[in-house]
Amino acid sequence: MMKSGRGDNRKVAIGVAAIAVVGAILVLALYQIQNSSRVTSTGAPDPRLAYLTILPGYAVLGPRNATVTIFEFGDFQCPTCDNWFKTQEPQVLQNLVDTGRANFVWRDFEYYGIDSTNASQAAYAAGEQGKFWQFYDLLYTNQGGINSGWANKANLFGFAQSLGLNMTQFGSSFNGGKYLNMVTTNFNDGKKLGITGTPTFFVVGPHGKVVEIIGSQPYSVFQDTVNSMLNG
Image 1 (cartoon, rainbow, N blue to C red):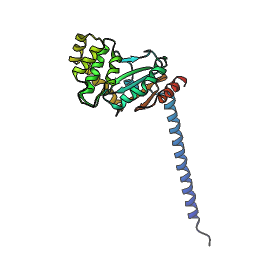
Image 2: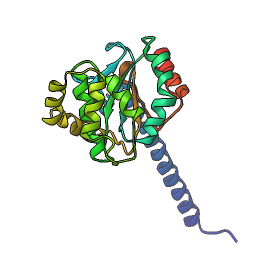
Image 3: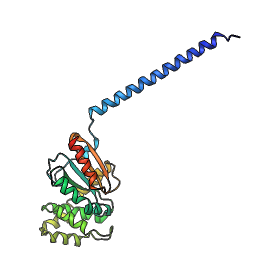
Image 4: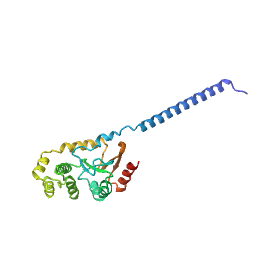
């Protein structure tokens, strides 16, 4: 017995509607892919670049106009930072910075406590006299237990004296809290960059490309990142 034509017509109508829906979905997907492609190709500036520029007062190793910049956000009390300083940093400096392929910028991200803040302020005060990196080396070389008082005033002044600094100038800057605002700004910038631990690195290359490297990564990671930026 033949069924009524109404059923067949309804099936046809449903089929047409389904095709129309699928077609609409495909058109929408295609539009989204094309739109996404346009956004990518236009290269909208990475918002992190607002916090990754070399400002006056920053400690920089290597040529300031290098094509690639490696920013380290670290804490002088951080054991992982200390490990990277002793095991990987020498290779980064020797093979990437000393050769002019990149420069290296250190910024403090202080979350351990008072010894962290004291150490950073003292390093910046030493930097006034051209001895930031020497003071930096002393701080990591003499790193003590977290907030154990190892970065107290007496020890920091002892480090300064061992470097032959003008102690009147050093004491004025340190005691007056001249660099406390810089320490606070670096910490706030770090939070805006999404940093949750140290060390955290940002490698900035041509065309505003930014690569984040988290933790005490081996030298090869930095080498590959810099090479990719320079050869890309």
